[in-house]
Length: 437
Image (tube, rainbow, N blue to C red; front, side):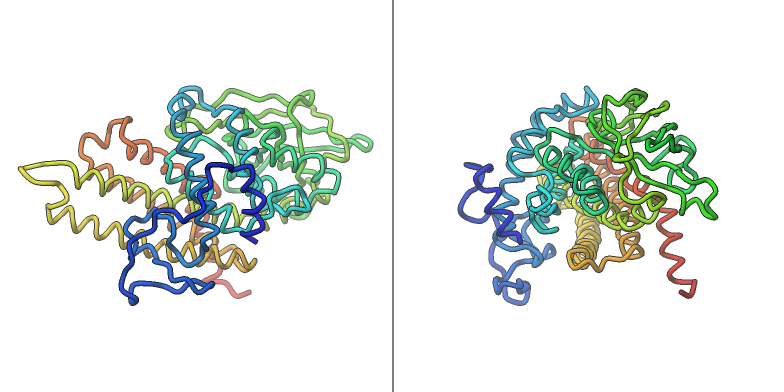
């Protein structure tokens, strides 16, 4: 699967793709190595030279490594130099989206027959990881490709798929999903946005908040109540595809956030928006079911961003303490610092093993909601602990915005909140523990 995707990607990637592998860790004794499914031995993160090395972890192949090199180069050349400017603007450029589309970085895990790249889950996970390693949270590629697009390909009509997916893969149509409202966050059954039938059309009214990609979006999946008489609101929710420019669809201000400053996040308002019957995504009143089906992937994505962000912060901090002098010696030569680094690396590597296991389960369609909730809760909490300790190890410089750990620190804070708060994650995990089926 990865090979097919890579063959399709290679012409677009052009000179970015080198025929060899990326910089792998030096050879280690056999006891420290793990056997890859194709027979090649690969280091796992505890034995690697750096946690962010290319060529490590048994879930990947040499083809994945080549793809990772190209993705890393894209972020370093097309995102990193401009990210500070986008932080001030509160959004990335549309040009970046089209560049990502041209080199095949959007819709990687979407089937070819739907207009996607046709790569495996591990290929799209590489994009999640490399964005975290670049410390550039602005581009909403993962939301667009791995949350919004799957709703359309799994539940949409053939016409909806043909209309939206090719344009979304090209980066010319940016997608968003609107669940959260001013009075309804993790509790989706508390939403007030509603759609009422008017002949064959629907009339949509309501508002949404904290919508990532909301300012730039060309299409947004809106969660709305369509049957208030249902015995449970979960049986009365539907999803709608609302396109930019529709009368009554108003984008509010870009929200000023603590972190994730280059990621456009906005309010959305719907005032008597008339939607044709063809705007309904999937079946009427089945929206809550669809949301529950897709939330494990969203939570796995958050977990991947969390552990990858932790790996990035650790490597930044290790480099800093090895260079910084205090009391006539390197900070890294102070025993308490060494012990702290040992703690951080151990926690990160243990968590990485769990997240990679979740990736393997999800690739086989076996990742359940409880396990995904564990991954999201654990990694986002760890990410914030790692961020705190890494800033502390930087001293005063860690508090300066010019230092990558400062930005990573504030960006990490959203992770335990979105995708369902960690308190909700614990509720979901606990249900499986204490209640019989």
